[in-house]
Every structure is written in C-alpha cells, then in structure tokens.
Length: 260
Image (cartoon, rainbow, N blue to C red):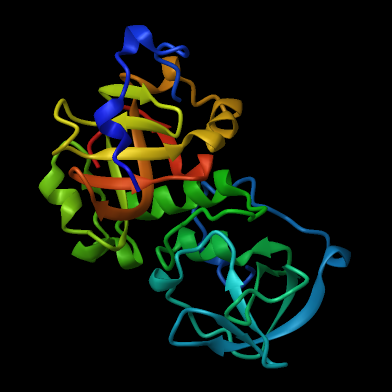
C-alpha cells in the first residue's frame, strides 16, 4: 500500500478544511448499568450455555459456537455458566470459522455488558455488529476505574497516545489508547488523526476515507475531534510510528481530559 502520508495536503488546501473527522451477576452489578440493553424473549432463540473454547468462543449445548458480539475474544474471562439458560440473538449463517456472531441474554440482560461490568471482557467494535456500545463502554470504563478483573493486569493497561513507546509495546495486538488529538488531516483515501507533531514517529489513527461519513454522522467531526481528548481502540501496527486503523465509529470515544 502506498504511503499517502507523504502526499498529505496542507490544511489550508484541503477541500474539507480541518474536517476529519445477566441475572447471574445482578446482585453485584455496578449502578452505572442503569439502562442495560434488553431484548424481548421472543426476539431470540432459547439456548443452553455449555462453556467456552480456548479461542474465546462460547459453546452451546447443541455444539454451536458463538462469537460474542462487541467483545475482544482474547480478553474474555467467562465465569461458570455451564447449563445456564439464555436467549441467543445471532447471525443467520456462520462466519468463516464456523461460528455464529451474536449476543446472549440472561433473563433479559446483555451478557457482554455484565462481563464488561465485572472486568471480565474488553470491548472491541467490529464491522457489521448491531451492539449497544454505549452500555458496553460505560460498563467497561467503570470496571477499569475500579480495577476489576483484567484491568489489574499490566498487559491491559490503557496506553498514553502521547508516548509512542507505550503504544508500540502493543504492536500487532489489540490495544486501547488515550490522548489529546493535535491534528486531523484528510487525503482522498485516508483520514489521519495525529497525537504528536511528528507523524512519522508519533501515534496515529487511520480511518478509511470511504468510512468517514459514518464517523461524521455520530458527531466525530473535525471541530469535535481536533484538540479534544479521545479514547480509541484497535490493532496496533508499526508504520511511520504506531498506527491504529479504525473502521467503526464506536472505536473512538470523546472523553474528559483525564489520564489513562
């Protein structure tokens, strides 16, 4: 892939200017989950959970595998839910790995949100998932602040986007970074969100230009992003410094100017 960064137009010359854009847990759930995602029982299929595979898939009693939508599979810590009844809302056809992608509800509560609330899962937006990310992100953030579950592990620490070395430690892996956006640039192919002055060395978020209208539709405009603090997540690659390509608006959260 050609390096479009080298041909980035000056901000003054860009047409867009600066535009860039479970009942199982209910007794111990944080108060922050005041508005959980709820699904009508008739909207899904009654199933029984049998366990979890080493890859992170949820296993059903009928031997189907479920990829829990909105969740980073590598982070999933599933409590003992063997023989637990649930409601499944999933894709009609399996993915290339033979698994169904969807959500599980225990007595009307989103299992993913409950896991996130206890620090037992990290949220990972993916293309084509109809997920209540607001609830999931709130649950995850509260668990992180309380240092629950996986959030006490150094490998899951949120990295400072102003420190390339900290983000580079997550190279080729999924990571969450936080920092102040210094500059947003636009080319015909990519929207670049820079956290440092030297883009060849510093941390950058890269959004495919064809996806940018979806970000703008959620309020992630240039005026909103440039100079603001954000928390972003995705796979870190090393190309002109640490880079995270983002295709889902939910992967970028605007936050108050606080430390990671």
